[in-house]
Length: 308
Ligand code: GUN
Image (cartoon, rainbow, N blue to C red; front, side, top):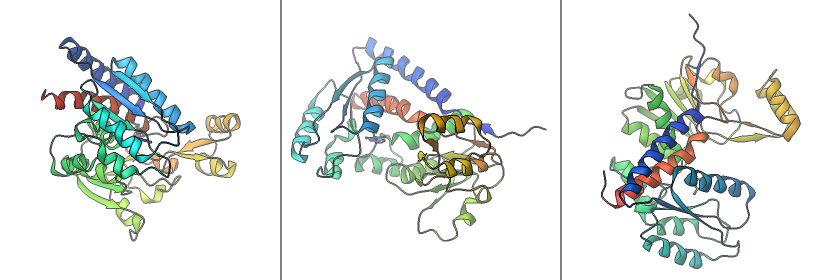
């Protein structure tokens, strides 16, 4: 029997979610409600500019109203707090997204806590973190929510599975662990201080890697047949690294020759070959983040109006 690992195509799943969101927007609009998202992008960070443009463009495609606010790098925390207060009070705005990272002189924590929890489409506010922890309806962070969508929509079981999350960030690792726990997985969270990491990862039926280190999870750390969810996006610029992670890969070599870099996740691609299923990088988890942001914007529009 041919048992090639199954590629979990984030682009296809993201299209499904966006089509569903577009249908919901049509329904809401027919009832006089047009979901609206504001994105705040401070200064001129090229990577953030690309990302934000894509968010605004997707809003347009799905019929969601959007505004992009681009204050200069010199904006103060107080000025940003005033901006957020205005947006919190606006009836036509359902979601407020402050693109991170912010300039060093801006107090990120204070700002994220100033966003009304009902409009916190990033799911970064402590109130939403608390709701997630308590299993109450709220807004969950987009990337971890995307992981659950990939598993669910592919029909992969979560309940009763051993899920191991490597990484404990507030944005990915912790919420991913809680979402998996809420789906009745048996969850272990590993991190930089974990002793004997492979002894945990080898026990994983579902392994989520969110560490931020290229190819950190190697094939010998993975149970054959496991579902591998790779959240990492790491840029390789050393040809030796490209050779190490993608030996004999002509397509990657061509990309490297053209752009001077290629992207690798937190899982060594050699591990994918022994997995049951895996999310590629790029085109896996990352492809879902914007779709989930759109989903959260519509969810926020409905939650705020008591529509279930
Ligand atoms: N910067 C990189 N990813 C994200 C994200 O998902 N949300 C926000 N607000 N900033 C980001």
